[in-house]
Image 1 (cartoon, rainbow, N blue to C red):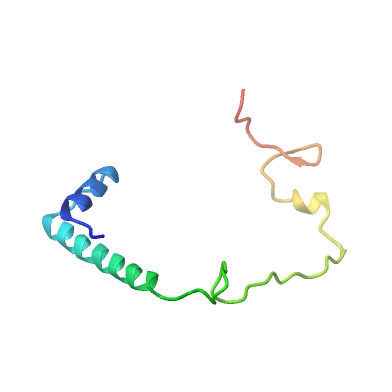
Image 2 (tube, rainbow, N blue to C red):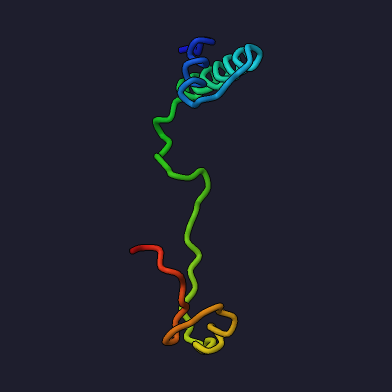
Amino acid sequence: MSITVKDVQHVAKLARLHLSPEEEALFTEQMNAILQYAEKLGSLNTDDVPPTTHVLHVSNVMREDVVKESITVEEALLNAPDEEDGQFKVPAVLD
């Protein structure tokens, strides 16, 4: 599969991009190089390679929850521009 200048112009129109003729030629060349590389990767034998979501092993690093002292409501509201009943008061955004 290869990309033509007409394909690049169509995608640019969909994306509402204004490309110069030089940019159209450059992007056509670059996209074709990407497709050629993808075709080369498609020819590799991956029968013995298990499917993965990441190249490297990724695991969540979790810590135990620890209960500890926190700031008081008064401290949290200390710099609030406006508060009511121990809560931040903000302008209404809905009717």
